[in-house]
Length: 251
Image 1 (cartoon, rainbow, N blue to C red):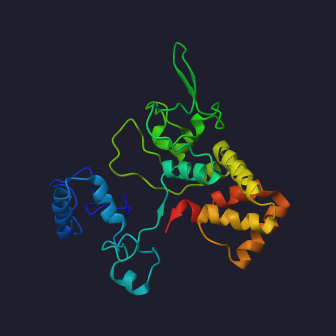
Image 2: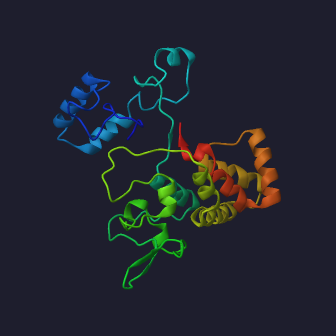
Image 3: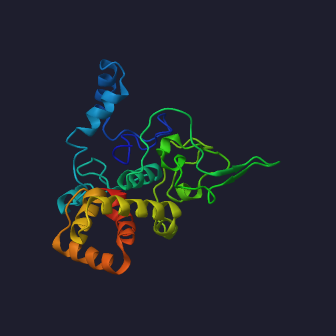
């Protein structure tokens, strides 16, 4: 989960037919330390994400590629696209709409009609409602009728076990991220959030970068987004940033 690939590449098969661990000594040490720390998953995750290996960048190097092109030995980070739930939650977060309440019942993010055959219509659901702002972990899942937008982004099929998620790049994903009503809604809310912070166009673009990619724009980026903003408006500029690789991928 953290590295994009496990120490054992067949997470659903640790038996004789599965793959051998790439780092057997590390696996043994992690198992022993997990037991020593009271079998606390929180401590295990904290140990992993604070390690020097996890904090590497994904930049390739000629010497590394020559020895281990597939990055089996984790000499760099694996570039990963955010999973479907993280994409949705990240957009809600930067737009200022994310409902961070913990616990409670799941929320239906679809229109439901209890007829002779139940109807689950995701297109009719109003994303502006309170239910539309809850974290993805609290989505009410219908195993037989998954959310098409989330499914496009490789969200796991709730009707089957998914020990390892697929991660694809398709034209349909680009179209969904550009034109989906959820993305359009969050773009508008992000624009309103920025407009409430400053009325200066240049500062608005700077704030857009700070919120979406956590850095300042360089001179070329600032000029390009300012020009785009003047022609198309701030909400469209927000949609552009929410579709950028720097927002959707972890490097």
